Image 1 (tube, rainbow, N blue to C red):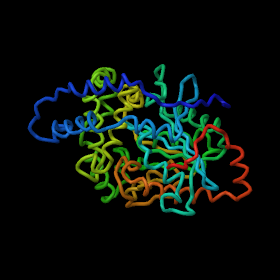
Image 2 (image 1 turned 120 degrees about the vertical axis):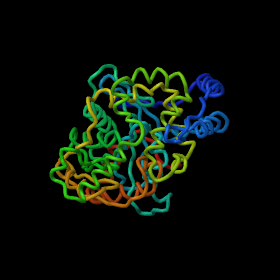
Image 3 (image 1 turned 60 degrees about the vertical axis):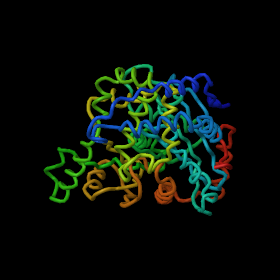
Length: 401
């Protein structure tokens, strides 16, 4: 295949799956501390998830799903980068990069790919479709972990724009939430002539202490509310900045410990419900955890934290138009407009932090709204040229999605 793009059929050795089940069967949970969820993930809830993981969850089903979507790898900057590539059968589809977050993986978009690539099969006949590329960030899933220190999102963004070049895409959109909200703007900076628009799931314009002097009473109330919410739960940035190897040593040895850590974060950020699996399918949560376990990436996926000295909100960029899924208060937009050309700032869209898993159809609709603004539909003649350009054999068609 051209440009070193290679099929990557996922076929985890059965011995690895047997080892996982044996470890789960030997799980030793502690006594429950007083205070219920105020002390962290409860033993009852974790025990229930572990029992489901061991007796009802089927990794092979999810493995087959990734292979059906189209699993590939290519070597960029001396690192193997894994990605999913699903080409839409719909005319005039726009290429779109979906950048996942932490502690997530390509499974973040498992329910979103279908509505994006085959809108007519999901009740949206004639709606805009997308060719979808979902890279695994280095250190996550089947992408190779960084081999040295000094990594940042700009370096990864350069790798992902090179990936799109190798796939033959001259113009495309970028999306991201959580860590992806940093990557999407950096991709726009890296390739402003190729990126038609950057779309983030929130995370732009959050006020900091430096902004207080310019706030009115309403702005300050919003700032205080945000600070109170941010103080809830484990400060994972500080924890992983200080001793990522220490915690990875434990998470890499105990699937129950890894699951407890991941559920701690999913519980904190699924803000519309009491328990994560009330918003996200339980098997999808476990597929994500299983991918972390099988690839041993509990530690390597935290490079974004341990390569930084402090937590900062993404600033964005002004080279291409920006849209968000959920804009937030007016003060956030005013602050975001210092660094971004905002053209889409809706409020009240449903879902929480992991909205692509929680509300995939709502996300698909809002993505269409934004990209219809910044990249009007391609004329048929241009469409035919683009289809000929990108009509390689290293992208699956979304017939079964």
